[in-house]
Amino acid sequence: MTRGGRYAVTGGSNQAAVTSGLLAGVRDTALLRVEDLSVRFGTLRAVSGVSFEVSKGEFFGIVGESGSGKSITARSLINLLPSSAVASGSVLFREQDVLRASGKDLRSLRGRAIGFVFQDAVAALDPVYTIGAQLVEAYMASTPGVSVGVARRRANDLLAEVGISDPERCLASYPHQLSGGMKQRVVIAAALISDPELIIADEPTTALDVTIQRQVLELLQGVVANRGVSAIIITHDLGVVAEVCDRVAVFYGGMIIEEADTETLFSRPRHPYTSALLDSLPKLGTRKAFKAIPGAPPKISKDVGSCPFQPRCARAMPECSAAMPPDIWADAGRFRCHNPLP
Image (cartoon, rainbow, N blue to C red; front, side):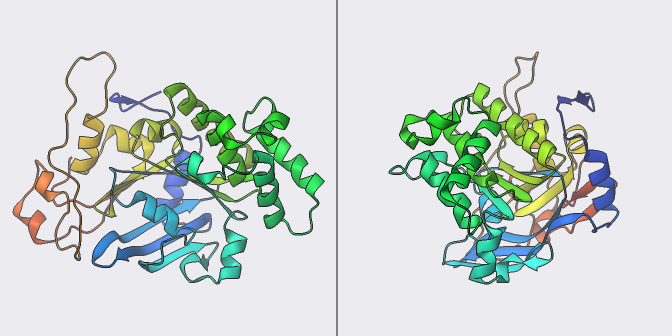
């Protein structure tokens, strides 16, 4: 469908219900609630004051340029940060604070309640073990007392579910014997093996050709629809967001500068950065040159005292360099801008 007559996008089926519930302040369906999350590495502030919610059955997108804090936010959701990181705020999964969870509680969350699809499928798979050995180990670790035979049957069924035509052959293969698309499917299978309630996919289509990208996205959509789970997809590709997400949070400079349902974000962006991202997309039926965003993303090593996009923004005003704008809530979302688009 065409949203707002400007961009061709296709969002999730439960978009209207999710948006109306969350923006009205209804929290009874929130599976994950992030509140004022900040992450520092020494003097470098990677994430600053991030807050958002993900409802049951929702497909939530996080988008932004490289270095905007997307992946650090994703890893914070399972408390999988480097030892040098200092995190504050809260990440509440079913009201349990992941950032303050014990090692035992984290082991029950990671892989069991929350499945994580890592950005690099090659690095995520151990090259010296077969796919079967890795999936069996993952299932037995998350399901104590299960036999090897049961675990192997579970792995076989799951590989078939994610679209691998010969699961038995795949189980006996090593990662280097699989194509990039098959490795990505195996990583998704590993994330699903314990029937998690939330799936976090960090750049799951990176380095895949467009045909395989579409297959992976359709697979994730099918998993969310068929299993009734929630999903968060982290990407820099707005085409991916348009294809699968119910709602989208746009990151810049380690913070959320706009959040809205997908249709509203594409048809009526309010923040100049969001609009600039959309204008940089290729458009069917036109030969116009891409509109590049001038300048470079910021590397912020101090507390935010002004809008981080101000040096690159064509709509900047004196207020933009004097103070960080607060969240402004609209009917379909929120944005942080002193001089928003109408």
